[in-house]
Length: 205
Image 1 (tube, rainbow, N blue to C red):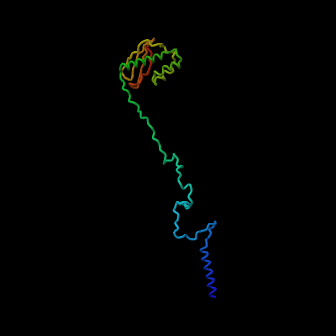
Image 2 (tube, rainbow, N blue to C red):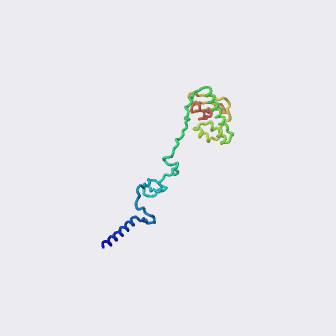
Image 3 (cartoon, helix red, strand yellow):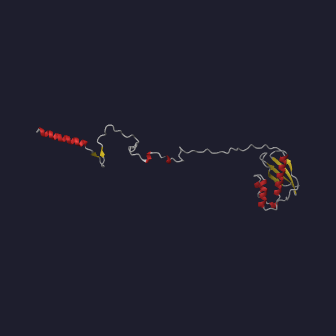
C-alpha cells in the first residue's frame, strides 16, 4: 500500500516539474519566457522597440521635425527695423535784401504781368502759363478769371521795387500799356523764389 502511494506522489511531482519547465504559449501564438536568466540586461529607454513615456510605441509625433518650424514662428522670426531717411530738412535760409534779390523780384513781377496780359490765349492755355507764377493761396483767386476781360496787353517798361520793408515781401510796380500794375510778391525764406500773391490794376483817377 505504501509503495503505491509513493508511486502516485512521484508521478505527480514529475508532472509538476515537467509543467514548470515546459515553454508556455501566450495568446496570439508567441512563446513566453518563463523566467529571466541571470545576467540579462534590460534595454535602455529610447532603444529600438522601446515604448515611449506614455507606455506606447514611439510615433512620428514624439519627435520634433526641424522642417516643421516655419519662418513665421515667433521664436525664429527676425523683424527688420524700419529704415529712416537720414536727410533732415535743412534750416531756412536767412532772407535779406541785396541787388540779386531785387533783380529776382523785378523779374518775377515782369513775368507775372506778362503772363497775365496774354488775353489772346484760350482760358486753359492762359491759366497754364500764369499759374506757376502765383502762390497756392492766389491760384484759386485768379483761376476763374476770363482773360478776354483783362485790359492790359503788354509790359512797357522796367519794373521797380517800391517796398522793401520785409525781406520776405516785395511790392513791385510794373509799367504796362494801360498804366502801372502793382504786384505783391512773397517768398518763404531767403532761398525760395518770389511768387505773386496779388496783381493789382492801375488805380483809377
